[in-house]
Length: 639
Image (tube, rainbow, N blue to C red; front, side, top):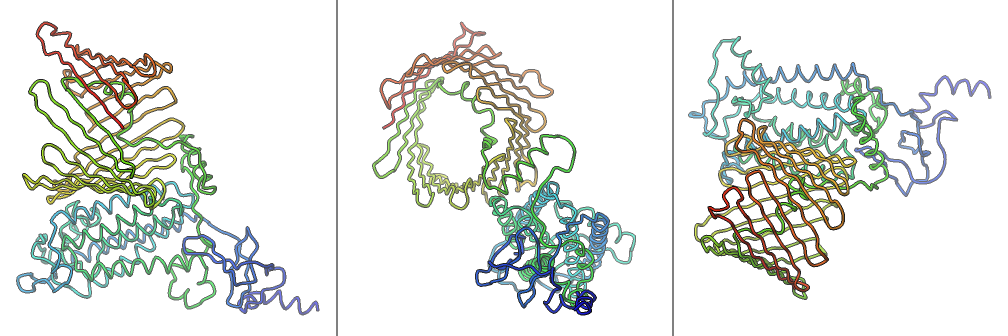
């Protein structure tokens, strides 16, 4: 018996390969068999009778036996450095191959574009390729943020470099072997360099440093058969969705939207043949899934053929045992608040519960102070607002106003219908300027906190049409929005994000005009908010500064301070004070004054339920005898 056990100990590896692990190494019990999914989550097969104990990791053989494995997630920074060097060398080699291929591209006058179903059917959109690259830039920033905060960032970066380098090496081979004619006569290719090796190296360095993007001035042709832009978009999308928790539905949805829209923009710009994009998407997704399936199941350890065919994979993944959990940590010792925030975020992801407040949208930062300054006034206007609702749930809103100075009358009629079962809201609007508007919105149905809407306007008199796609997502700690103003010349993209923690708020907003390929707006906001006190500061385009303070003194009195100035201009500064006092449950009085000498007073009175009267006046104290003072009258009806 002793001899048999000794023989078993000496040949434990052989027994494990046969699915008969040495006694003490094989788990036992009953339940569902453990199955590691590609994203690292666990699934169970209810038809199985053998199971692995909870808290340990095992590899299941085909006969149902288990091999115990100790979880190892070694960062191995030296391997990560090697993978980074590998991908940088591949990128440099790709850049040089792009220069060589550019010299060999067939003359479009002799070899016209090849037939393509998509390119022949869809008209070219000039600004589309810039939008495709913009989608890639946004995805890249999201991935860099995930990489920064992920606890196992070294493994993630190593996998990204390994996969990206392998796919781009394959791309080098395909475009070097076969040269296709350009997909369109519109392409503006850089001039060819014949025989000047130094100039070719300089161009390769320019491509390498500019990441091969036209936004950075790269205009080479010939790199077809395999779309590099599609590779980057798809790889970033899959890494973002793989290494973020499943509960982050908005990030996953946004990542896929950017990926698919980026691919569409590449095709719509006629920069690549359809087959280029299809091959790039297919190969990138297959390699990503194969790589992670092998890594998560550790299948290559039991297959000599897999180790031979994937030597680099075996080298990089040798000390990563099983799926990489999505855990997060702040990489620096400061600030402490960020470390606490990430720890609480990990707890939230594990428990799927949270009591943290949702921060406001960027446009609503400082809203309480704005309301004290703006609500309850209607200078120079006679205004009537009527709101009604039918038994079936259709809301009607009618608004009309007359400017006292020129007697100009404007009005609008808006209807709104809600379909709660599907989270849908339909709106229609008509104005006295003969402008028609429609909109549809879905909220909290695709995922909780996500709101999608599409608005259109049409003016029959001028024939002008416009559209706007709006997305907003809010949950604990974060409130983000992505809007697009649609125009034939090119869409205008608006991006805004606000983060909040323990009352502190930080927000960023930008506007990108694709028609002009420039940043049209760049705003940064910081603030602090408690129950009865709010502080807000804003920097617009780096030159316009503003701030506000709001405080609710008691149940009846609230006041606010507003300041603003522009760098380099002393005449554009503004300082204002405002307050609102609730006289009783039906009446309130408001007052405000600024450094321009304008004093405003407003009075609000609820005459009866559903009927509200507004009176206001604006006095120019500096020019009291010159006139120019304004009065306002408003009446709001609601039934």
